[in-house]
Amino acid sequence: MNQFSDGYGDNIFNVVNFGAIGDGLKDDSKGFKDAWDAACGSSASSPAVVVPQGKTFLLQPLTFNGRCNSNNITFQIDGKLIAPSEPSAWECKRNCHHWIGFKNLDGLSIQGSGTINGQGSKWWKLYCKDYNTGCQLRKPTGFLIANSKNVEISGLTFEDSPKMHIAFESSTSIHASHLRIKAPGNSPNTDGIHIQRSTNVTIHNTTIQTGDDCISIGDGSKYIDIRNIECGPGHGISIGSLGIMGKTETVEFVHVKNVSFYGTTNGVRIKTWQGGHGYARNIKFERITSYASTRPIVIDQFYCPHKHCKDQTSAVEISNVVYEEIHGTSHKEIAVQLSCSESTPCKNITMKSFFLFPSVNYSRHEQGKEGVDSFRWQPLNIDSLERGLAGL
Image (cartoon, rainbow, N blue to C red):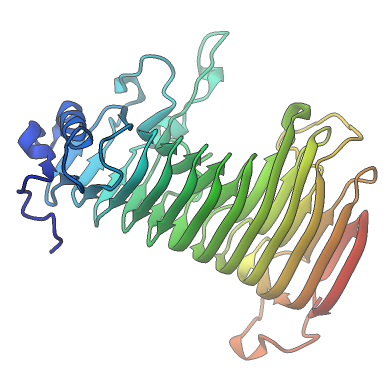
């Protein structure tokens, strides 16, 4: 039972009281929009929009805009939210950028025990090659926080987004915790949480199973704290990609701690495009455990998800990166891949307390023993590499 469960009070704005049905069939977007507008314009010091449990609400793409009277609004989600299952049923003015968005807010708590299901399986199968020339198909992000500050999001389950499940864009002081994010391992571009142009972001105590990066940190992000995460399946936790099409892009002051990777294609990764500019610096990966991840540690200044990419000399600078207490198993022979540019070498890379072993014939009593079936590591073009390694 939570303080909003009865759905009554001068500061409570229950979507059902604003016309939402919750049968999973009728479009409830207007009821949600009207409840939000009433809460946003309320003179109450702590208004709350309530989505009650036991109901399923079908929503079209919807944005909850800010400039509200209160800087302490709660959006309590205990029911289930679903998107239209058919991409053709989505009602978008233009290409769908996102499904549910919160913008221009200061002081918002999004919380509850509910589920947010983007019903993205049919989106995953859509590609521009299936359409006429000139297609600019954009698959929508599931849940967006943009141009906002002092936002907390906790307790919710996110499932099967058409694209990224959660995105934080151009925001500051965003705190996410105790979330669960789920999509099949073969679902394309379904990042768990993506951070872009945002500052002071924390992601704690969260489980992510998806078909792309569990967490991705993009351009303009700094002071990012990620800890107590379970990731897998997925592509690991990535900084980047940075520098696409020669852009100047930056990421700095990132701390990733107490993360377990389960059968992921990567563990912790920094990826940049050739020809880019900018930097990724002041980054620490600490207490990382890999359970048969394909590549537990990756720096790749030659990132190219296509068959061919043009060779270019400029590169995003990577410096002041620390790897500490990296444990577990790797699925491949090369557990550590550091591929840095000859023209812009990686600088000040520190590695200490490494214990990585083969995933085959690996047993718990062997974890932490030095020199047992050790793996090779592959460094390329690194200035100032400090190593204190065991098991490599």
